[in-house]
Length: 216
Image 1: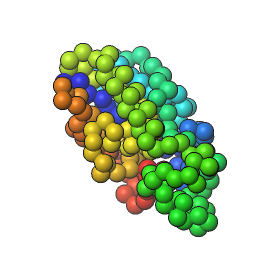
Image 2: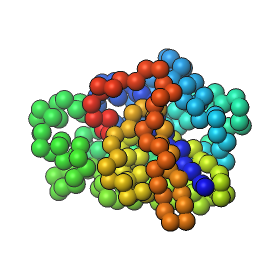
Image 3: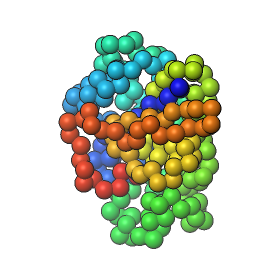
């Protein structure tokens, strides 16, 4: 069975500050503590991977590079960039503080949070959610098409687009937000894709269970 291991990038400065960070923004990855990346690598390195792909955004690329550098059991596959794995674009809201948007435009922010596209969000330059989820799913299908019958691939991407894209791939509309450095496993069968695991973080020693909406 072919499988995709989909990883959300590590925490960034804007993640800590609760600022919207989409395709048009790329605050630095927090790398002062290597342990979370080592722990993720230790989990992933139980498996053999035929390929590794990343979003072109720096925070995902750097997460992939750091994590693959800690592989010791299996050879780390060469990292390839796929533009379809980039995050949603939040348009004029890139970099805005979540608390500020909730206070100033609660209804519109609620639409964004629930992924309910509207003319007002379009006017702000927010990417169409339906098109974005199809983009990510198409990228995943591209990757799956390169794999042999029982091969695995790594996919380093982002919280918002991965959540939406996995909904598109599997038909599981109840999938919730993804934590930084979480792993989700999508299995491909002749009948379609299914969720083997979602938002796994048990390998991390420190996880904030009260950080709220992690899909933005």
